[in-house]
Every structure is written in C-alpha cells, then in structure tokens.
Image 1 (cartoon, rainbow, N blue to C red):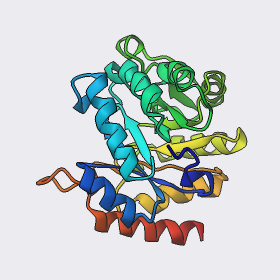
Image 2: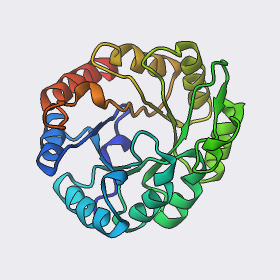
Image 3: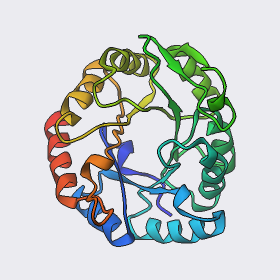
Length: 246
C-alpha cells in the first residue's frame, strides 16, 4: 500500500466522505488526488467486514483512505484502531483517548492519527474528555498547548477540532490554529464547514502559520438522495484550495 500521501507535500488537503466505492473514485479524481476519502467504521457490523471493504476502497484510491468514527462517536474508538492496524490507511480519526492505541497498533509513524478535542466556550482551552468513558463524565478541559503536548506524547499527528459549527467559535479556533502553528502540529477543522465558510476557515489557519491543514467537509456537500458526496462540489473546494495556497 502507498503510505506517502499527498498531504506530505500539500499544505492543504481535503477530507470528505464517500457514499460508495464509485463515489470514492469520483471524489479522488475530482480532487486530483489532494483528498483523504472518509469511510465510517460504524457502517460495518464488525472489524473483519470493515477491513475487507476498506482494503478495497484503499486499492481504488491509492490508499488515500481516512478511517472514520462516525460523527466522533467514542464507541467506535477501539474498532477504528483495530481496522487501522490491518488496513494501514493514510489517515485515522480518533477520539482523544484512542490516539495511543491507534499509533501502537499501526506500528509506524507515517499514517496521520488525529485526536478529537472540542470547543469549550473559553478561548485557549479545549475539551479532551471525548473517549468512550470520559465523554459521559464532567468535561475534562485543559489549555490547548497541554492538549497538543499530550497528543504528541501518544503519537498523534493533529488536532481534530470538532464540532466547530462553522465559524460559531471563531475566536477559540483562531487560538487553536495559533497554538498548532507554534507547536508544529497539524490542524483538522471539522463541523459545519460548507462552500460558503470554507475559505475563511482555512484562511484563519493559513494566517496563523499552520503547516498542514486538513479541513473536513461532510454533510453540506452530500447529496441527501444518494448519500454520495457531490464530485462537482469537491472540484469547487479544490479550486478554492489552489487559490488559497497558490
């Protein structure tokens, strides 16, 4: 499997969901390869069936595969790690507490493993209690810098900042972007991103100096009738991306 992904040369790489294998191929072509194609673990009854299907996805798109939880579902954390171990995708979505397990089971440092942290309503702080047990307890809130250091301790590659609600937490997001830039960490803004707010959200991260940005654009570009991501919208996002990063 190809493990040197486009985002190692791209400052900006899209992350969108595939509704089918044909859709995955169409997305990959529309983005000219500058994309990670998400497939959700919670759509499968068990690890074996997920692995078999995701391996096929990976073969069709040069392993530009992003193994997803499904709306940040903490109950999927262990399944995602077990899938990642066998599929060896380019990208793994994890709750904060699942990062170490995913990295250890991957057995390599090339695949990007993000860690989900959430806005808190306080600039400079994030919620890290996003795991299967911790999500049900009182919020665990720490400084952004501490969250980044903890993710690095666990072998994480990036912060997945979710749910953003588009630009609803703009000042908090600006701080997160600044911290990621200062600590040489990737940033994955997620939640409520659409064709209208994509550019300002990415511009904030670029202006802060974040070296690699992986924005997740989901429901806003999915055809509700088919469940597929619209390739034309991916083309539009690619054009925006090229304009933003040159």
